[in-house]
Length: 249
Image (cartoon, rainbow, N blue to C red; front, side):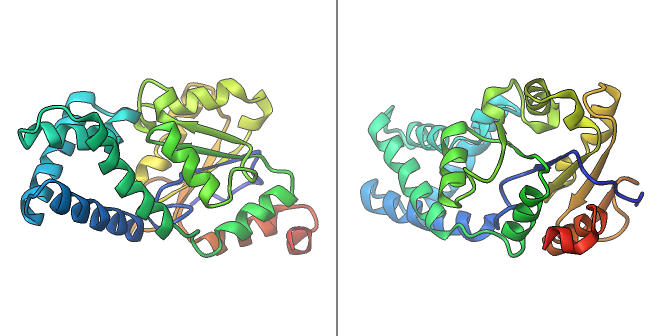
């Protein structure tokens, strides 16, 4: 990995980056299945199969867009596939069951709040760029008490594509002063969260960037990317700020 520079901006992914996704999804699906078996009279396995088929159908239809992740649309499609025709109230209930338990299980990843606090202490702007729809992503931020911590939020619903198509990043940099793109840190859980660096440089939206991936093994996907943890990212920041670690304590 190339030696990182002090960031002019740090962009975080949200899901499975600032908090672990799997415990939340597991809790949401358990609530969803319980509701469906009770209210729809279907067996658990049958409902899970229909839900998965509905999810795939919605994603195939919509492509890489914010709405392709909508549990409301998955529920609506699943109800149709069960032969119950459209039932908006039931689709809303399915969505609510899932997200209620999901949010109750959501906890910040260890080290996340300390890193965010260090960035704020050092007056480094914080952005979140995330795939999904605005309402639920905003609810997550409020639930995790991050809504007053981050400076900018972009969700893929307000762009034409998910992050893989770069449009959410274009929306973000259209809102920011030019100097915020001098050297940008990208923090995420998948290669897709950091694979944008070279393309953003080519589009002259940023001058340079460093990617931090929270999971993985083997060779990093690019010279500008390293596998890391929240604590290690904070330590790297502390080494770069004027005055060293004392300045970010």
